[in-house]
Image (cartoon, rainbow, N blue to C red):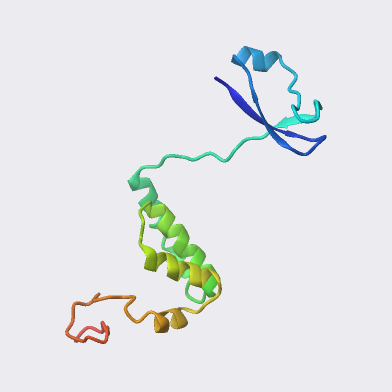
Length: 137
């Protein structure tokens, strides 16, 4: 059943109208149910495009985007990280969400790291309980 969204230019409301068939929509003059006006225009909602995992990961493979982050402010870094998280399509956990949110609010990475000492966890698997992951050379 075709539902169509419109913006009424008379009362400035968004309205949804139902038509029994596509032919009925083609023949109709849409009328606002709130004010009775006929000065409506179609309002197209945001659409979601289904993408494969390969397509999402390919979008992250562009190294030129990383070059822009070398001297980026925290807000830009946070936006980039949020975009990467969305492209992965997976829940990256509460710590990731907290770090991104704090970056987007302008907090520096150094401040975040200082307040979250266990952030990296045991990344290096080394013997240092302090979390230093500097490899032995």
